[in-house]
Image (cartoon, rainbow, N blue to C red):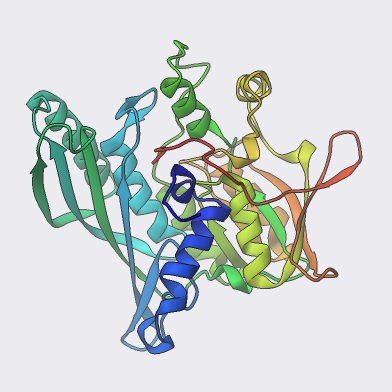
Length: 344
């Protein structure tokens, strides 16, 4: 492709190819990380800088451009705060501070801006994350669609969760029902008028889940991610590739609400490629998998399930394989195309 398309921002195969060709391959190795830390040598949603021997500063940055900016279950402000916090958590960090840069379109109602900012501030306040700086700019009318929020999140970790550490025998756990956010945004973009109980974004911070798990089981959690753009399919394919393994999942075990499943079937969507904004996917030591699952449920994530396991790679390429409900098997490819544009 000679021109940038919406597919390049969807979190799937095209985006990964673009990043590799335009960024990762252009940088010398010494630029990709701070020695002893984690950076573009292994791209993740966060990076880590070593400090004081056994501790790390965890840093993440993201830009949020969801359409519509208000949706069932949240808005772009809540999405930005939750996404920032969750990206720090998934590398093993405890979030402590954030910065934001807000760009709005000329003519945006002040009431709308204040509501979005208050939504973001509420999440940071509830999570005891300090907002320590930022920037604000205005673009001429017609040169921006309403608002874009860019954030930087900072956290501290004693032990990093690095997805390439996934090992054969590890179990895959999801903390709750998937595809809620992606289905809700798609419905909103298509103008569907649905009740909140039918489709509602799951956007929320995952501190109440991840911080207790990190404290108790940190060394037994070998991979962690919130499956946003590209959904569960992209997360698992990235894990298989970076850890040089094969991942087998059981379709029947994947928690999906019936309303979401029905909606996806009606519109020809694959829920495994749709974003979640309040779900964690974990790769854990098999000896502790059942114990970790029970802990997750005790923490209030009652729909959590063990959905699969990691195997040694036997093919030339790493694969994610789905055992279907009828007993067959299919390869779960990384998502291709637009999926749902401007989802986060």
